[in-house]
Image 1 (cartoon, rainbow, N blue to C red):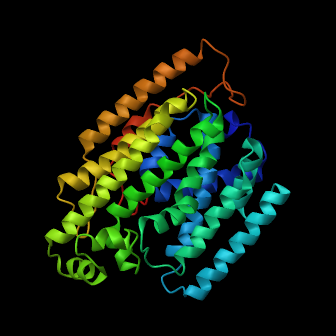
Image 2 (cartoon, rainbow, N blue to C red; image 1 turned 135 degrees about the vertical axis):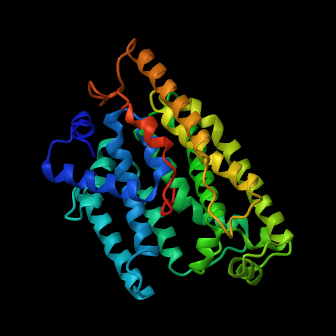
Length: 344
């Protein structure tokens, strides 16, 4: 977290500044695409986004990355400790756990509904015991907590030009679209963890099951049935993006470039998957540098235009004098290829 961002957000307490900085680190380490898109937001709003995503990344670490030798029991206990810290932090407005401290402060500043965090933790607990989903309807229940509520948490931070409940379904859909994109891109890695997030009924419609996916992953061999199933998952995901798209125009104009950039970059992951023949069981899809460059430049142009328009009207409530600045390094950062550890 830069001092400029923290100052713009009015965060002055040293411990709280450290807590937000920890969240920024977690977000940057795990999710290059969204982390970099966040740099297109006004500086005053970035700390809150890092708090929301940093908390989500921390919980995900407990589920998937907590020590290589961690047992399911140890993961469950760690998640329970996080749940207790979350409940206490949201109630008291602060916590001895830095990530929860920043999250509680963000929730209070922006009036974020605590039920969104409760639903998120429920899905994290599911990840400890559920290894596949029979139908898309079942998967959507899981994704409500793991993805849709992230979009709903973000809305108060981003701001809207329409009543928030009108924008909410589109924000929820965008969270789901991003997660479905990750599921498709990471199907091989998830399989190695013992999980399949693509619905079993979608796979079965094309003659695909877990053993066939495992065979393809282990041997490097392609199978037309798998390609057809993955193509169907891609088309399903694009449909959710269409559900989300109208919500972009409902956001505060100075927040739109960030979300639109994330929208386009995640969509570009789908384009890359399709262009590479849906070979996600064998290699990770990486958006070409030229495509990232075009998106980055477009995002910067939109930030500049929004900044100029905003100068003619009062700034959003809570935005400091630096709220409309965009660092020149943002475009260069967006051009760097995503690291192999990226999850979002």
